[in-house]
Length: 324
Image (cartoon, rainbow, N blue to C red; front, side):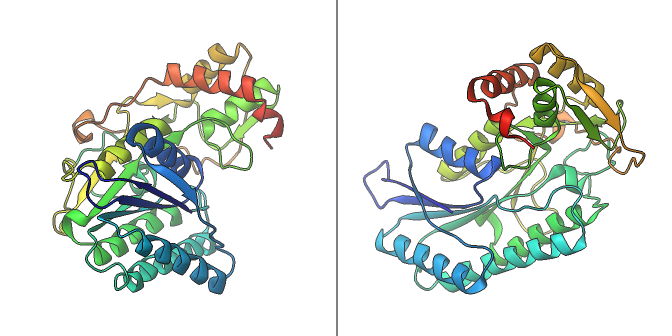
């Protein structure tokens, strides 16, 4: 758990951001807040494995924020171990953690009374729109598997706790970023690591499966914009019958096949990408997005550039040697 703070630009009370989740997305949001917005970060312990210890750690975080006499507070949920293929027990455990987090926020409202608070929830466009083509702002979510249902439930629970403009939901498509050990890496990262190590990439799907990919730093910078804004612009698809919430569909709107991703990785690594297909095709559905669904001030970067950056970082850091 990361607590980030910065003085108010007008000399008033400080602004704090509490991020739950230190993985690919949470870590990138932290770095963006520090780099782009001048926040200072402080690590706070948080043990998810023991409910009593979790309670103690969260109460300590609230006490720390109370002592700061804050002018604004933003909560960011970027936590979670459940992936696209998670089963029912895994997503139920994740939902229980999220419910506990929201209950703690409600309990903390007394100690933090009078402080304007907002919630930023990282959801999933892939989970909500599996099998959908050219998704627009009017496309209704269609969760096909436990992971997608989890994201729908999390969004609904957040709406029950945070009304209107106090809630910001981000629905990114497939997020990719630098390869790091002990982290759930996406298809691009796995292909790069395996190409550099001359290993085979095994996946369930087809070479012509179309997906949409967003660079994690683009996502993080977008979230930072809205954390720092007093009145963020609503996304094209806000509302959905739940009052005026900001819902942002963050995609590149550039459909990319598995074959195209393979070609990009081969060009960047100058190594062949060996692929082994599983007999099951339970992850072969197309998921693509219309440019009209994208929100203002969202500028996704080019995958060719980012794939090269991933390769250069992997070679410089040697992290692929520790990738399972």
